[in-house]
View (cartoon, rainbow, N blue to C red):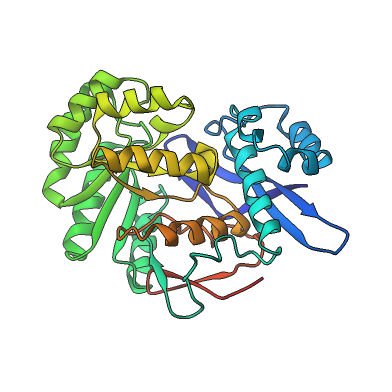
Length: 336
């Protein structure tokens, strides 16, 4: 089932402004009424699965879901379609656990009203006034970490905003996400220019597949660098290891919808931790269906860093949520 999510406010990124995005909802239902649900979330111009055939592929997966989940090699069959893989994995986990939206019950202590996950608040690109309004609201809501998109507007204007943000909220942690938007020849100068504002990290300062230059930036940058888009589409484990060995980033960003689900994400995390590379997980504009699953999975990892799971309230027509937000943290309400 295709579900087109509509943004409450258009989301500005370095790849353009998003007003809608598509998700495909996958169901595994038996004669007793137990129903597991998964989500295939597609980000235009970013997801590998953003292809004309995706709707037909998801239709075929739905039609053949029972045979697919009984074959443990399904993740190899859909290796080139990470969002499809994630939808299958998610629906299978939900079904196997009784169809209640509890994906990790054996280890899951993300208890209602007790445990929580700290997350960063997200600032969408826009005018100074628009971004400042967002920042003030996030600070009032109790966020200790703000993530700001950079790289698409005038750099001097972005720098001025960050300077104003730091001056106004001196205790706030600031994360930046360039989405590959810095010109190669200016990247290091920009990073050095921003360093005086005590930036926690910056995601993907330059475009992907420039391993030598990215490696140099990771060595020289005064701001820790996190790989994001760099991980997308690198599906072979040996290539993954090679990339991490060459670039040696300070962090990697884990997005299950873009990397192929929990199994694939676990493999990236294991490789990162083996190399003493930090990580945190980020939602990729999924609906509340996948956001709930990702939050539960993240909690089992006991990662102390604030996660990037703050996109649950950006859509007009989202599904009801098992999560709620308070003081910059995600809490779990209970079964759906």
